[in-house]
Amino acid sequence: MKSSNIGGQAVLEGIMMRNGGKYSVAVRKPDGEIAVDVQEYKSFIPWETPLKIPFVRGIFNFVDSLVVGMKTLTYSASFYEEEEEVEMTEAEAEKAEKTDKILMSLVLVLSVVMAVALFMVLPYFLSRFVEQRTSSRVIMTVFEGVIRVAIFLGYIFLISRTKDIRRTFMYHGAEHKCINCIEHGLELNVDNVRKSSKQHKRCGTSFLFFVMIVSIIFCFFITTDSQVLRIIMRIALLPVIAGVSYEIIRLAGNSDNPVINLLSQPGMWVQNMTTKEPEDDMIEVAIRAVEEVFDWRAWQKENA
Image (tube, rainbow, N blue to C red; front, side, top):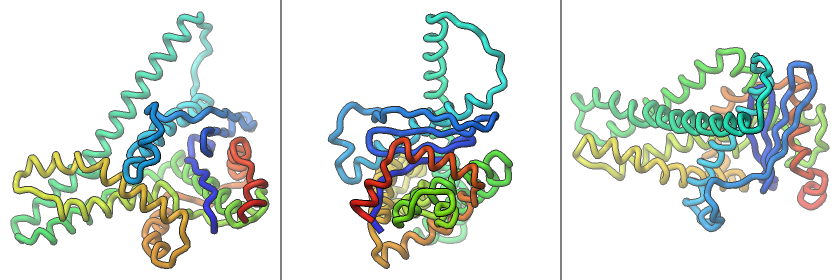
C-alpha cells in the first residue's frame, strides 16, 4: 500500500487535512452546513533545508503540527462560541487579531510545558520510590517507562469519557478512514469510507506512543549521577526523541515490511482509544476536507 502523504487531525466538529503546501479545515456548523477554510501551509521557520534533513525535520514538523493544530482548533471553535456580535473598526479588529495570536502562543507554550511536566518529569520522580529497593538501572529505567506509558494511557482514557472529546475521536476515526479508503484504491464516498479501517500507521497517537518507547531507550543509555542533571537531560533530549520517533513513524507509513508492521502494532492498539466509529455526517465533513486539498482520483490513477 503506497502512502498518499496526506494527513490531518480532528478539530471541534470537524477535520483538518494537510497536503504539501496547503491545508483545509472543514467544520459542521450548528445549522448543519459545512464551512471550509483553505490556507497555504507555511512552516514557522523560513528555511527549507532543516525540513529535509532526517532526524532534524521531525523536530520542526512536530512544532509545525502544534502551531497548525492550534490555529485550526481556534477556527473550528469560533463557530460554537456564544458571544454577542460586536462591530469593530479596522484598527480594533487588527488589535484583537494580534491579541488572539499572543494568547494562542501562550496557550501553546503552556501546553508544551505541562506535557513535559506530566509525561517526562513526573514519571521520573515517581520512579524514585523504587530506588530504595533496587540498585539496578535497568529496573529503574523500565519502571519509569512503564509509569510514563501508564500516565499516557490513563490520560487518554479519562479525556475520552467526556462527550466533546468522544465526538472529536469520532472525527479522528473519519480522518483515518478517508485516508485508508484512498490508499486502498477505493472511490472516496461515504459507503467506502465507512467500511475502511479507522487505524493508520502514520497517526499522531502512534507517534506519541513511539516517543514514550524511544524515551525509555535514551534514558537508559544517557544518564548521570546528578538528579538535577537527569531531569534537565530528559527535557533536553525531547527534540532528539521527537526526531527519532518521527523517522520511525515516517518509515512505518511508507512500508509494508512485516517487521515494521509488527513494531507498529502497539501504536495501532492505542488508536482504539483515540479513534471511534464516525457517523455518516462526520464522514461527509472528512471527505470535504480531503477534496479541498487533494486530487485523490489523479493520485489513484498514478499509484493505486
